[in-house]
Length: 396
Image (tube, rainbow, N blue to C red; front, side):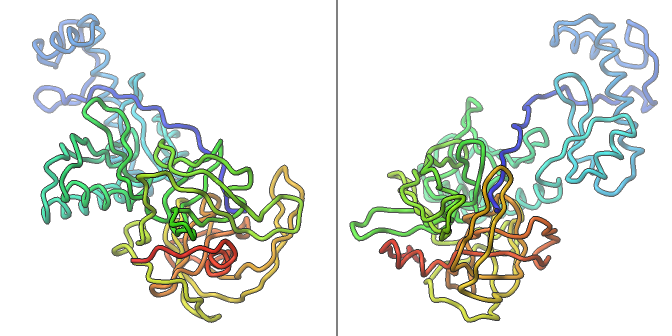
């Protein structure tokens, strides 16, 4: 299945930025008097940290040595923009694969597997800059790339203007690459609007947000993969409750259909545009007309992001074998060569401007490589779910 186990929370710690030695010489052994560092700077640093001058010098020496090591580490996947000193004074380098982590650690530095590269975060920040230049968000105090949280962090005063809300909606389209904090540093939900493809947490697992719809009484619901709401859980986005599972046709160990719905909290809206994770603009959803076999189709999900391919078959049956669960037969899914990964479940599929379905699962040996990296995947057709639950799709 393409649901994912939650990863360990990132430790948010900060260190003093490295200082360059006087006269541009490399740092070496120094005396308690400051050595090649300016005495005034050493004394001020010691006072701010509540340590002795000698300890301050040792701290500066350690930081300089680690920075020198990083500068000499010319290896693929290692980007100095993703480095930071942790609370213990260790220079930590964000990398996205095990090979890069090994190279960093072999050099004597600390490596951390992170979701986003420094380049990806810089690109998100550039888009937000352009959005602000178009319409100034006066309620947004500032924003920038934070390697410690591996996100673009936005400091928010208020969101009372249309420009503020437009800026936050654009930020929300990048899902896990962006975090919003208030003036006291507390997490803030980016907006009342949640984009399909964003991460949604439940218990110690997560899926991706699907489509918004309304029932016959006008109540807002989320249409998702049934296995994402198998136990009818509470659903969270960016740490805030936004929906509650209400119905599912999926049960492990039984013949199942992988569709389900959740009631959406008041004040929350599922956007009628799908976030593409930086691959062009958002895609508006204008309907749910089923595309023929052979049609081009793309999907959005929190793990493999925006991937595309073709629809291969409908009315397909598949047996899922999830770790710790009995085998499950799922019928009436669609087959595709779009690549998906764990955690993408429930996320939206679209062909042109027509919503097609929600990620159900895929082969566990899928290896997604960019937008057109191919694999074997299955999605629950959207039109079947809308018809079964008597829903009307929210459209742009």
